[in-house]
Length: 124
Image (cartoon, rainbow, N blue to C red):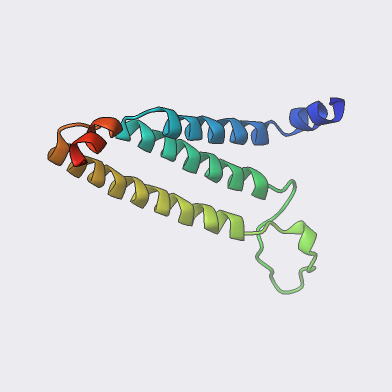
């Protein structure tokens, strides 16, 4: 137990990732309002982005640009792939949120409610 606590103290960013992820899942599962569910989804997506950024951090790393005459030590360079994936995930996150809000607006216009139970009762 002491080893687990020591590991959590050394990496508080991973603890924050887990807390945000679980908080977003709780919001999506517990609230019947569609807008609140989207907020929970946004928190989950943001926690995953936070995890990618925290996981890709490398101490004393330099940019992966090699000039003539430089040593090719792979441990000295930062990997650009997680950063590229993070930028791509941000674009997907914004697009997902925009489409989801448009769908929620259409649900509200058709059923005059954003409550999941009321919408399901009106559909049946």
